[in-house]
Amino acid sequence: MGKVFTTATSEIPKSRFLRKLECLWPDNSQTEGRIREVGLNLQEYIAGTCPTNPAQEFTVEILRMANTPVVRFYARDTLSDGYRGKLRLYDIEARDSMSGSTQDWQVVPDRENIPGNDAYVNYTNSVDIPRRFFRIRAMLQ
Image 1 (cartoon, rainbow, N blue to C red):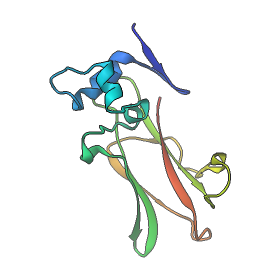
Image 2 (image 1 turned 45 degrees about the horizontal axis):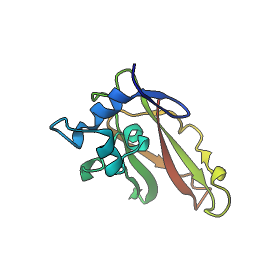
Image 3 (image 1 turned 180 degrees about the vertical axis):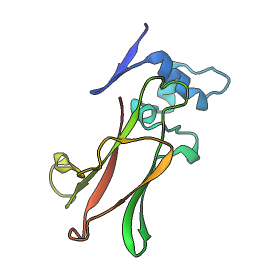
């Protein structure tokens, strides 16, 4: 089967990873050396982003909608080549302070395993918790 990239939750055949990288080298001249050269990593593949295409960057925004703060991000699907049979899922995680351990992040209730469907996801913070910090975790399953 060839080399496999392994993460805590999935194994990704190298050929699928390389097919995803066609966004970098449309002439199909991608090599492992060039992948290392541009600093590509497994996180780019999992997030569904292409580091040379600014339109594909992963961003998390804090917006005001109806005078309420909203956390917003774009949840990408896995319909493109190189993800056959995989699902991209997202968790919204939060914490009350940036001091402390990196293990202090907690999944927001009812905001886990959000499927990527090429649409924006909006989350409104509870009004009884006035200040929180958020991050989004992307996973392939």
